[in-house]
Image 1 (cartoon, rainbow, N blue to C red):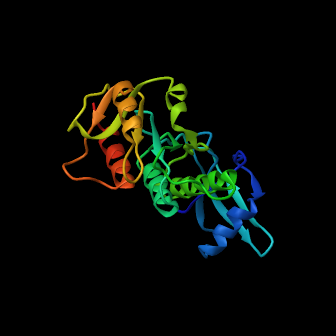
Image 2 (tube, rainbow, N blue to C red):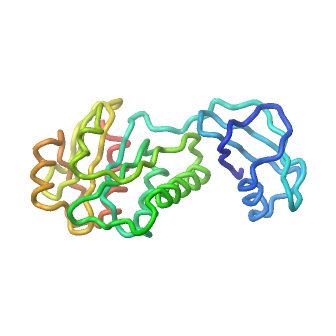
Image 3 (cartoon, rainbow, N blue to C red):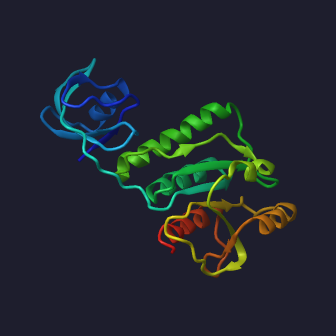
Length: 232
């Protein structure tokens, strides 16, 4: 069933016109009057609705009761990822959201990409990628996507749980409590610089190696989320 994110709280058992962005999406999908959809607003649960009318100016829906449906991981995972090429970072965000990441914190490193132009617009773009991924995969809560952070500020932002460094010289497997929060740190193309790597190896609780080959940054990030989402 098609799912649509609403920026404002969805009213139950009500008839109303959806936001223009949602209406446009409904038209693009060529949905018709009488078809069923799902609306969610990020505060938890989802609201079934049916399309009452569609025209060029607005789309009206009729909602029913909110359902207490959640598809979040038991483990809260924050992904700290060095900035990489735009298209690859978009792909990383999309797949990380599908795998259940709770938050994504881009970081500037010695070898990372730099954002050309307006950083605020880039963060808004990343949030749009996350929203679209939630619509597709069934999640009802939008992961937090933060503005890029300087490398030296990483540990001042981590408050709970354990830190896991993706390290080609790390352990092939790690053991974590099923409910412990985890912060995962992934380097850029070319890896962390020697200075950064030495600091991270000293400060992180675990060093994790994914497989025996050298992975691209975005591949390593997604593979680690798949491992840590089920690691106990």
